[in-house]
Amino acid sequence: MSSPDGEDDIGKFDPGMTQRMNSVMRPVLKTYFRSEVHGLDSFPPGGALVVANHSGGMFPMDVPIFSVDFYEKFGYDRPVYTLSHDILFMGVTGPLFRRIGYIRANRENAAKALRSGGVVIVFPGGDYDAYRPTASENVIDFNGRKGYVSTAIEAGVPIVPAVSVGGQETQLYLSRGTWLAERIGLKRLLRSDILPLSFGFPFGFSAVIPPNVPLPSKLVTQVLEPIDIAKQFGDEPDVDEVDEHVRSVMQQGLNELAAKRRFPIVG
Image 1 (cartoon, rainbow, N blue to C red):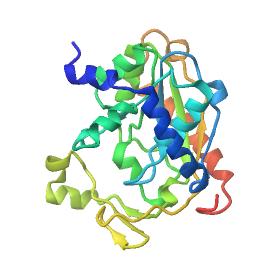
Image 2 (cartoon, one colour; image 1 turned 90 degrees about the horizontal axis):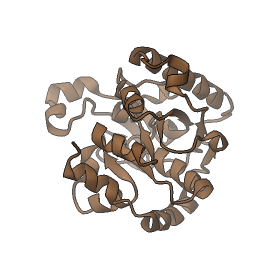
Image 3 (tube, rainbow, N blue to C red; image 1 turned 180 degrees about the horizontal axis):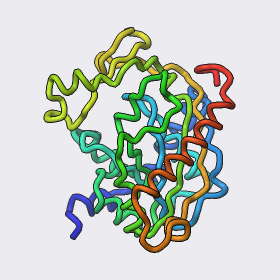
Image 4 (cartoon, rainbow, N blue to C red; image 1 turned 135 degrees about the vertical axis):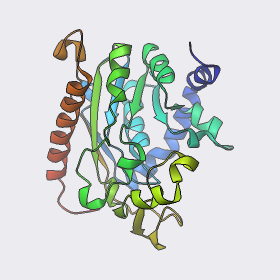
């Protein structure tokens, strides 16, 4: 049974507001980050679960970069929903995020959005992935999370892998700080296993606070071929097997994307 909150999350999507936000974001993304999205021509019709790596620390641009190009190609009658941490909906900005397609990350919301024909974006690695060290920027690491596979199976939708490069060059990410987060009990306070350490502009060293300004790194996203789970893995797919396949496909795609990158930040 869906919760009222879950219903509100889906029902709050406002195509007009989303279009206005994208008209503001697009010049920034295309000029400052020189963003590119490739592979949308193979995107399947109907509901689809986009499984992506997450990059950029406190200021990840993955969703707006994907959404701006997706809506330009497919229009605003096909909503893009993003499964997000509860903290995003705290305070006065919560209603705005709901109106532009951000929904709380739970199975009820995901199932409702997918069955409505919407496109749902999930970052299985979450903040653990977004704060991966720059030295490991081209590594797919979901920290063992596989729930996205069950979500796609239960909704009967394909998985669309997507990979991005450049996000971990917006500053120098040094460590996730998992040891420090554990020591101070951060998980009990903010549901987070990390307290990342980075170096950037203008404050230099930062442990989330003070927040540095993202450098103008070129951000490129590659949407890969959709994965029809039932067709490829049968009527009773093994979650571990599907997860391993998805991560393998994504790692190969990320390797190929990274190989085209000539210089850090410049692209």
